[in-house]
Image (cartoon, rainbow, N blue to C red):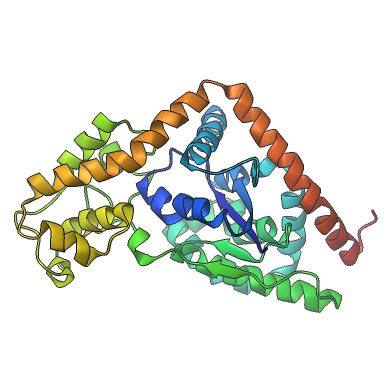
Length: 331
């Protein structure tokens, strides 16, 4: 059984795009893999986080993952900072990785923009910590979005260079598991931008803690256009908001875009939004309800994360200790 590692930042409440792009996929992968799921709080602080908010978001994120179907008894769920192996291996990888490799990372360029001199060095070496997250467990498969694919390629470059430099075959090659394109969810206010938990407007996204009334209100206010739904996907090409709502329906209902249009073609967005609301509420509202229940027992959540960290440490410690011996550290 192959080992999967995947992480999500506890820097805000996950939204529908996170669910369709990552969390739902994680739940499905549990049946055929050994899974390690991580709340990557060390990655989160590469940009400023209010400490109390970070703690609160970490617990909320844990509750949401459990409510979504992550089985912490069969698999491992923990927060990254609780396992020292991540930081120790990341430093080794900082010394293995070439600056030229990091200079090519497009995500740093996108986040830093023209103000790169004022960003943290942590944001710059973020990909090395991601490589350490994965290789501390010798995971061989990693579910990632397209925006993280370059980081995973760097992970393989780092693993190969480490193996070459120290004359070993220690770290394995890692395979990216890219979710389907249909999982890409756009803002409810602007169909040309990704749905994001950092968007200033909560109306732009459906959060996994939203109740049925909130979901209905956000979909009712979602930006659309004046035309009816077409009878084939080509009719959505120049209509980003319409395409987004149809894609959300298709992803949550496990239908193709064509199947959705076959059912709703010729309708205006009033009736379609009512149908979409029902689909979204059926999928998301139970997660919010279960999250609320779990958050009432903070002690249980803390125990779950601490137990997960102990199990993660038991896997990572011998791997990272051996890597430290290979580079010449006294152990």
